Image 1 (tube, rainbow, N blue to C red):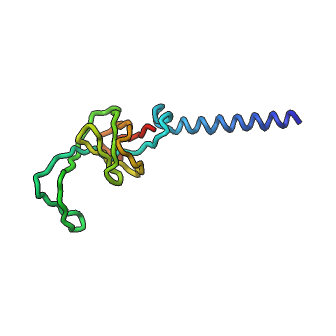
Image 2 (image 1 turned 30 degrees about the vertical axis):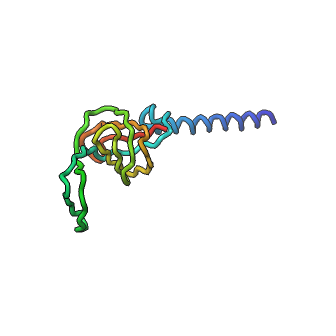
Image 3 (image 1 turned 180 degrees about the horizontal axis):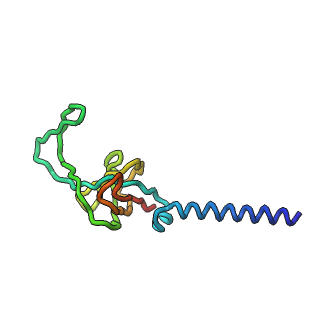
Length: 135
């Protein structure tokens, strides 16, 4: 009877270690594994430029809108940046201390100047990096 209980206990311990190992290995970086926050693809980074008063735009559906800012795609140096971000709309986040915006893919974080790490590791392709929220 004690042998069966030991086997069950050992099996449970091995299963627990396996699950913990998979969780740690699935993170891209150690910071990501420890942060408990979400990590999302970054599509582009934009510089905000103020437009003259009474500027108008026309969207892809032919609807006219008042325009205050123009977002121009920009390149950042490769590396990790500690940022505070605010969600402006779906998949668009502003950086608190800069006139920069981050376009993400499938990011559902409702951030209001939340701390995050912006990692830039490419200039071209489907993604240029990651935005990892620190909880």
